[in-house]
Length: 229
Image (cartoon, rainbow, N blue to C red; front, top):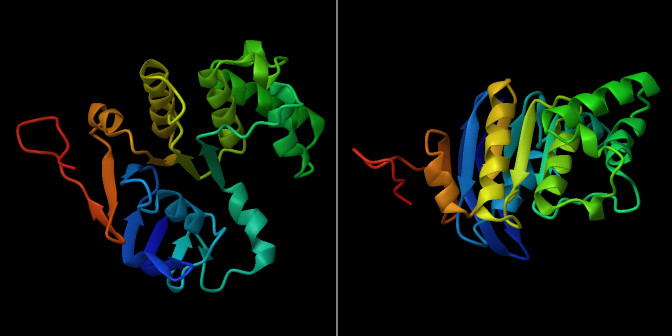
């Protein structure tokens, strides 16, 4: 489903990745870890092709960074749901309208919009908050709305960029369980985080560490549930 092949990338002549290789299969759940500045957000941007590699290529399904035309970007991005640390909700619209907007821009009919919004909000346990404004919600609830927005088009891949970074530990665990539930239904998930304790508690998932410009698979220590970071 997703391949990084000998990817190199630099910002302002400062190397971020050097011959990075990575492969992910459909239905996987992968933690993406690494120190601040290791390139987690850059890695995700390369997937939805907001940026392109300097050398090598990224291939997501039938889309290849080496030959993708700009006109194909909207179609690619409809197959990817993205959840950000800072929620990025439209503060002048209620919860329902935040989700409906995603479908309205694609020209979806009103009945389909209503059905999909209700389904997505039910999935994250917030159907009763559909008329609430974002500023009336807790941080955890706002992130649940962001997750509902990401899954509303049933994307093939969900990218979570530090989705628990602004949340307390209890709420972070609830959000983590929600992502596991989404993954169990068949959605592929990449969960970028620097919260190593959260990773340890869910260490049955695949773990990839960005280190020195490369992607390194992290193994569990033998006879323990700890992760050797």
